[in-house]
Image (cartoon, rainbow, N blue to C red; front, side, top):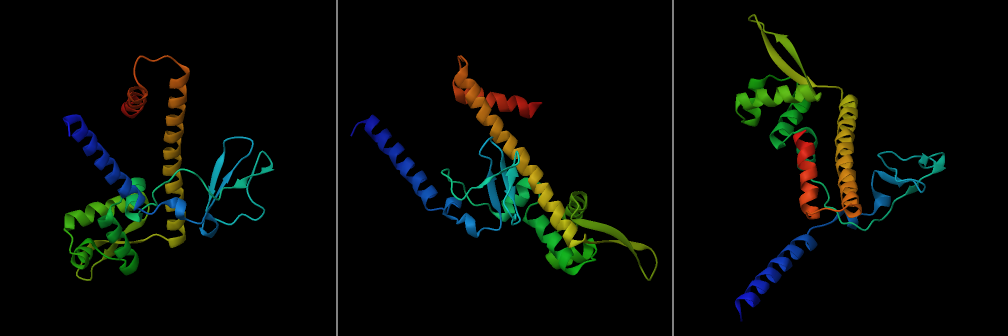
Length: 214
């Protein structure tokens, strides 16, 4: 076997390993959209696509015309992991979620009580509590001590309000993600319609580096 043959064999082995990794992971295309608690609708006259978390009696409309519910698609996507979704959309890692859930279940509680319950460092507890208050998932108030003075305690916002805020917050994040994907598609289309000395991969990433820097 020559050096080139050996290199080609190594590349083939790597490709098979990657293919095996992807094919062994469950994909969202395995899901039955008719059984999911959401719906995706597409306008037949424009490129409008809508996501809804509720059953829509009579379906969705666009331009006054019925939209078609999408029940299958060709591109494979990985089903989301809750921890990754919360981290990507809200910057909330598992530790932050643990703190939030503990407050919801046990609140009102102080940072010291949370640190004892969760066995987390108090400074870490306080940092995440402040972030959760800023996000709008928790509230902070002061509780008077019997011996005098007060202590800060944390408790959950109304669960209906939390549901709305987290869904709206995620939809805003998803909208930003969708805008990035659409811009990526437009960048590819612009490249094919113009003359470039650089390859598409170079033009593509330069475009988004400039947007990130700005």
